[in-house]
Picture 1: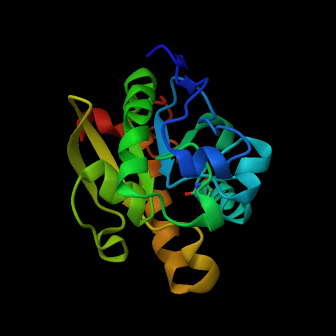
Picture 2 (picture 1 turned 30 degrees about the vertical axis):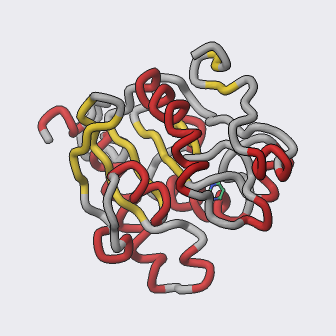
Picture 3 (picture 1 turned 45 degrees about the vertical axis):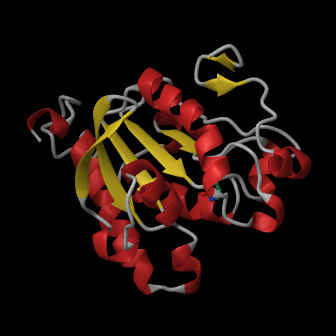
Length: 200
Ligand code: URA
């Protein structure tokens, strides 16, 4: 895509409301060959300020959970369904999600992760193209075609959920633990670094 440099979007004015509300385009961060790709909804205030996904309160929660399961944030690729902050942190519209979809698909294609973890309802429904009761389905791994390739998607609750509902913390914890097992980050793979997904 001409307005992309690798997995980074360099310029885009597809969504007038988002162009108006953003300070910048917030691209994904982390290794371009990461085993794990985490997909959130869209940048919040802090992400918009710093130009990096998940650097606000949700990011702190997410980082802690990753660390607790032996995954360093630096080893993970983290991105969002939309790359520009929606006004008043509203959910992105269907149209905005669609406008940004090609960028996300391109990033997935380039990173080619062993596992995608969707955090929260918006990214899960967007990537799986169906309604999802995230709290019920959290922790399940599903295969879905994304951009013409079959991908493994682990459904997770959003880290912000545990800020207002402590019971969601266990769910997030178990799900990140599952991600660690699947990518072989928890030492349960015998230490050869081989992703367990090879035999999934
Ligand atoms: N929540 C998201 O879904 N994405 C971010 O980047 C930050 C918070």
